[in-house]
Length: 127
Image: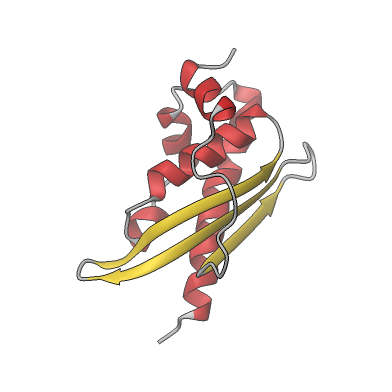
């Protein structure tokens, strides 16, 4: 049912936890299944733009929700905000070597959580 990648990210999640004084926080949930994700980002201004220097997550949910949260942090870390905004639910599912169709909403939540954290950062840092 689950790929080895999903099991790996569920049993040994990457970047789990909170970031104190995060530059942006995105919180998303699914009222149907009860999954809740919080994505924290730290952004650094570099020559190539604003880059996600650190990213962490806190998730309450099923194995797929935790695995997709872990994977989104791996996919986004080191990317510019523009690159990170382009990470889609399909990118997350592909990186996890697939998700059962009934669990695809989890990857959608992870991508949405990242996008919300970036929007939060941008709203606080309007120039």
